[in-house]
Length: 418
Ligand SMILES: [Zn+2]
Image (spheres, rainbow, N blue to C red):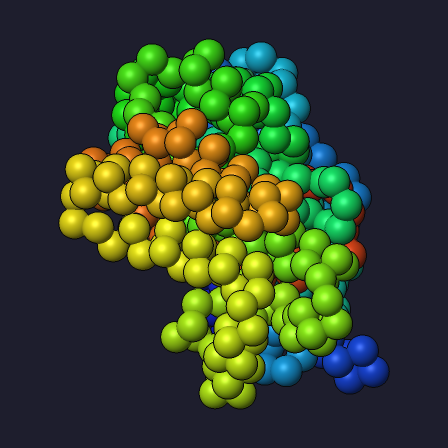
């Protein structure tokens, strides 16, 4: 068997194409394969416009496709692709060879391999490993994700979660919408206002979903999202998810800590310095040293410790067996926070009073957690997925890169797209 015949078999070229030459260049460690069509191609090729019979029109400039390495050596396919011309309508068209991927620089096999790498490591690293230009790889990725996303079907979507994710330090946010049942990202867009919701609804309906098929939406308590839902969806029960309620409470505890650090006595300042991480965790997640420190701080009767306790009690309410019990406990919690605030210096607890106000104002949405049994576990997990996505797209500033990478990693798309 000649090397050309061997490569013909390995590439699975079939009857219409052949390897006309193969050579290895040690200096560049590259295997070059010259490919061309066989006359039989013109017996089966048809005009893309009307299906008419075609003949070979010409062979314009030579093209190169990157293929999978042969052993450790780079492999390139070269060839002058023929153009066909229709006997009926005279249409001239480029013949698409069977090995070509979605981008004209890579073969299908190379693209499939590169997609696997891109899922696992930063794009800059993939470019280094494959010795390809990062922009070519990005363009290839865009084509696959766009193609696969275009075919995604959202007709079964009924439970949606939405969350905002920070793109960079500063005020740049993506709103990410996910299907909480199928556990996949549906849509992401820049911004976090009412328009964000309209954009999502448009995408949903472009993929066979329907706005009034949505029955549950899990989200934070931002007014823009609430208005967006109200404006677009008729049958939705909004669920304010546990994660955001507790995160909100944690932030307020931190405000109390900072106020106390600023205005409290020397003892308070000494206790609270560099303690912010302590108050963000649950007691069971603290290291032994942190636990000792926490116990020590708690004996000092600080406002921060009280606020922390309020947060823990709030969290414990989420263990209630029913919405009915939870409702009673949420109300009691609000009364308790107000009572404590009144009894002590109210201004330092004002952040906690805000939490109480928030809970009271959004109680129906908060209690929907029990009715629907919706935990936002998927959205929470998405935060770490998103961090990984940011690492993969590090160094590329436009949100398009991030969104494409997010769809690749968490969109459950059919890839490679063909
Ligand atoms: Zn034609």
